[in-house]
Image 1 (spheres, rainbow, N blue to C red):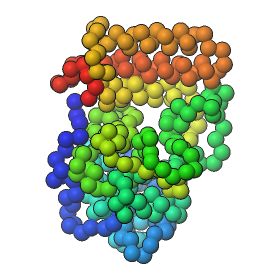
Image 2 (cartoon, one colour):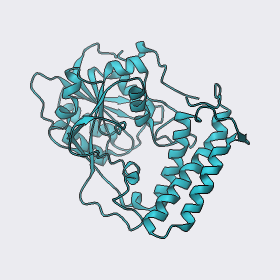
Image 3 (cartoon, rainbow, N blue to C red):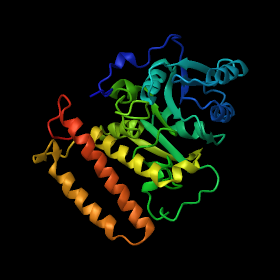
Image 4 (cartoon, helix red, strand yellow):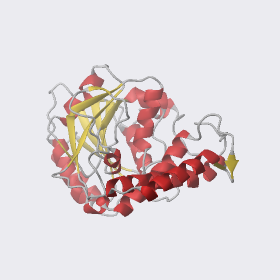
Length: 335
């Protein structure tokens, strides 16, 4: 099973320049040159103390559009601020790890290629990291513009936020209880040196064998499990678009199927799992039967669809179970 948790510490932090800055913003992109230009414009306008040296490293993950021309325009307009890096190996985790290797910063901040950020985003996200108060930080991710949910979704349930890449634990800063999302998070570089990079068997990729979610949250959970402190900074605000196609049932169901696959791939089976049928633990069949029944008897559209996503999540785990059991080192226990 591909896994970067044990990546060589020496591979992190090596770059061709040898120079260092306080912060590197790593922005991976693929065929989104128009939204990328909007995001880079927001990043270029960031307000930080004059004493803070920072850079923006854009990692082009094999784009076929005008991505390189867009980035090179910003490199010429802001000399020394923007850098372009081409990563031919497809998959977001490969691009992220390439960015980590080439970044010059002691603090690494991560951003997506289709968001807008407040002027103080980078300062607020990284202040505690630069002072050494915590290992990592995550900010608030809100939708761009007004968000109107269909009747089969309910604001009272929070499960849909992750599906739409929204992260909103509230307006008060504090210690994170859940890992931050990839479009608004930062870590001290030494965290990658100590714990390895992002797992390449998770995250957006053209390879259908790799489930889309969790390359970002897995890394955060890895640090939290090791006792590292991650802080929530609600003033580090990112606005994420919610395209119409993401507010469709088909998108949600496909996402939760992949979420089930990624959860099983990340965590494995619970300890002391002993009973299997065809390589699939019996407890998954029991849970699936319960949630199918709950789905069938639900009356309210939002309740009914929520339970349907739980069914898809469990089906994803069942599908992944057989593959995981065949993986080297799989012993029926959580990874």
